[in-house]
Image (tube, rainbow, N blue to C red; front, side, top):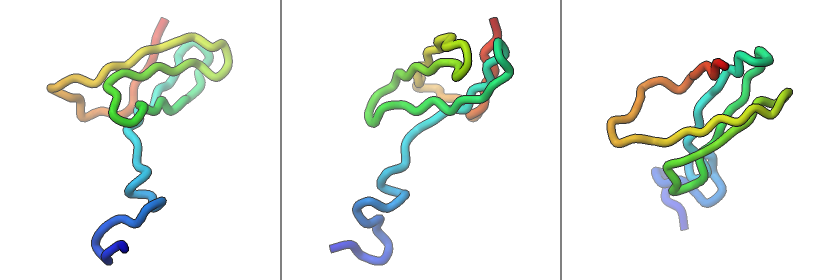
Length: 71
């Protein structure tokens, strides 16, 4: 049973995933890349030309969530 201060099963807080926002300079398009739950690596692709990009979370971290993928 969920208490008022804890997220209930299926709520947006319990489903929150880590993501980064990428602007693909190749086609001037935007894509959000999600990290699989519990993983430190993720990959995404340009929605138009399918150019691939890879990300890895680091211990130091990065305060930015928005990146530009340039050729």
